[in-house]
Length: 433
Image (tube, rainbow, N blue to C red; front, side):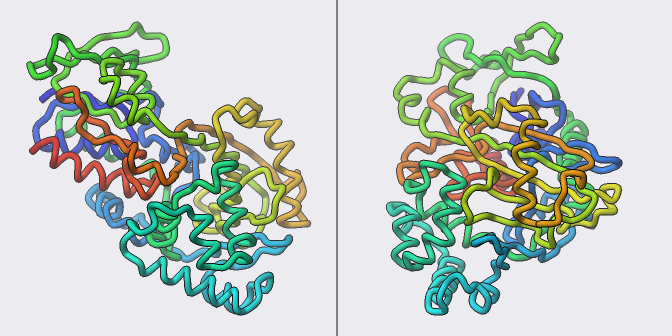
């Protein structure tokens, strides 16, 4: 089978490798110059740093297995960095014991209740009971109104904006149930995984085309069952002319909405049901500092007024020596792609963000900043409402030999390298079978 895979992130590359190992003639088409999708990095000295902050949890067993398979297991390190929440101008460590003993903004009885409900969600295995209730309703009821309004409402609000009251409790369950305090990172960057996947695909006879934009995919004739019945039009470089090629099978790992744009032949009733929902874009400003802003790896904000939803100091997870002595800080956001932030220059964003770093560390001065980078990506954060499950598209579409696989289908999760790789492992068995 000659197979075109649209998109070269974790999902597309894993699918390509497994199909190539089974003997398929696989071609991956990725618009960006580097493989990896949302997990792709950019070079800093002799290593890569992700454009958007990434780490693994102990529960990410499928991704860990892939790293080991690719011979990178010795570079995977595990640490337990400090995670905190900024409340009334003070950063409070957010481990269960720290909340119980030191989270003074809440009375002790509320802290006990908050911790008990958190433990329950950690132990509760199924999420079906949470699908028809919002996180706002469930958490206010069981954690208590004070705890919800002080701790979780601001976090939901900063992440989802006006949609925060509609977010499904199933989504919140997945965030609390699957995460560990021990975090894993591939020393030198996760880009190594995606570069290794490209090498392995090529060794199996497949092809990965980077900088190749897919323009459209269409069936030739009434049924895409004969050899070469799918035609894919792509632009293999910014100055290249479009080219059309024949394939037996197409697998799109692009966002569902983008897939519908590229394949207009998908039936109208299928489109009406699954061309649905909203997703925010991701925006990250990364600054290199002369010295550490704090001793916290992940700092989230319940205090209003911060223009970013999290400050993630990567070099509180990994050593500064890996990055030429730089202290690297992500300032991240999820916002509608219509937000003015996505049109602002890096200098404008720096001017807006840097004064707020002084709220985190009063000693901070703009002259601490030695370098900066800025990245944005669409369709990065699905808005997971109670209606979401009814609109998750099936992998197999009404068009023969056209398959869909993307982040919209990892529900109740919403993104993550592990869930993309796990979906690929499951899907390739269905496709090949």
